[in-house]
Image (cartoon, rainbow, N blue to C red; front, side):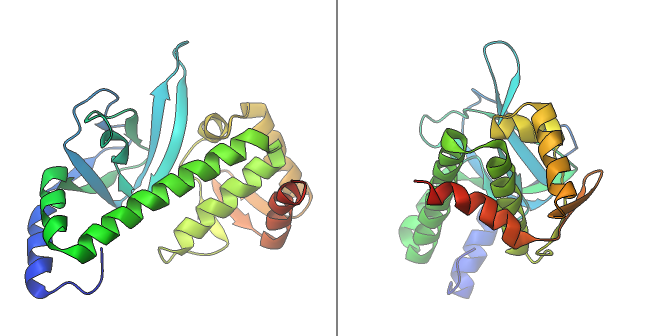
Length: 221
């Protein structure tokens, strides 16, 4: 939340986000096509957003973690454009969008903050499009791990260790890679001493090597 709000403004903001909702692992926070009424701030837990493709598969469009906002997809057409599924037991703060808008008209700091959050989301989406457009498998997975650990680190977690809340299959769906390719690429990173993998627990041993894998791509353009 934005800094520099007065007691009164914070109190009003608290009233806006007073409602909390728990979502069990595998449960859905909102579905594609549902009317959009609220944004959700994730307090605890981890989500994936996905859309069903024409042949009935789930295409993962993003992963969201505690401290991030989910539901921005609904602003454009007043309907959600994806499903949001909890990858572990989670709790969110419900932020009715009308109330947020009304309050942010009065409180400039809040308005700026909401715009920043939206902008960050757009930049992230754009980054993903670039990632999928031109990168080889190793580059995609390296960029994914770096992005994940960087977002976790910004929330006070370790800079080198993470527990993957999503399956290899979900990572593949998000990165546009087959399951075998994801597994093979993880194995390659392990062999090269870049990461250690124990089931879902990943330790980044050589972050510089991961960055070099990603940057070698950018140097080619």
